[in-house]
Length: 196
Ligand code: URA
Image 1 (tube, rainbow, N blue to C red):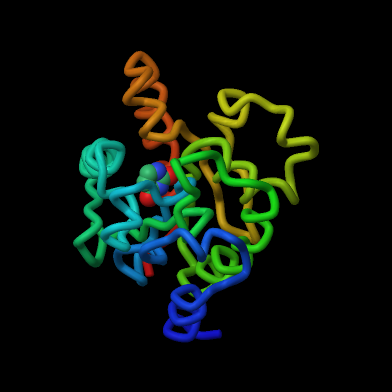
Image 2 (cartoon, rainbow, N blue to C red; image 1 turned 45 degrees about the vertical axis):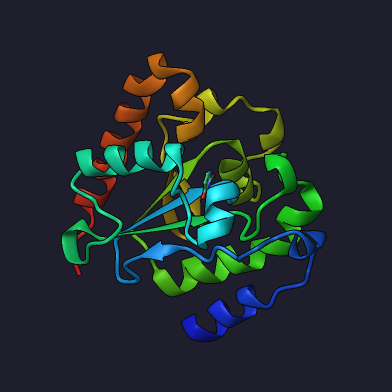
């Protein structure tokens, strides 16, 4: 599937029950040539209404964090970033994604990564980390998110940095310094790759 076909497949997806309650699918937003891919968990209410990831309060924090490392969801070139989620549809009442839903949606994110060929993936929160790293980190579900930070993981040949979800950081601002360290590590990894 090319990018357009993938977008259409997501827009019409009925692979799990979330298709019955969604208002919009949320494919992702940003520069398809970007070096950075940010992966969150799932759309919330605002994202479901607007069809765009991270447009609520957590999204504002994410935008500010990205700005701090020179990235902007509306930009192309060196400032470009693509933002997507593990799930493309909103779980009702913002409940956690269920394993079956993650399994059904996983091929879409995998294909997005293949087509985008990012130089770094920033995995935000435990669902993004688990979905991307389950094949390479044994027993990942039992590892606290904090223990997955500070290392360069791999997802199908792309370096992955794990960090806190911005919604968690809104509740736990004392961990913002750690999230900043994660962004700096990701920046370091990108800087080591020759620009294309
Ligand atoms: N939280 C996420 O993980 N993704 C969004 O798009 C919005 C909130």
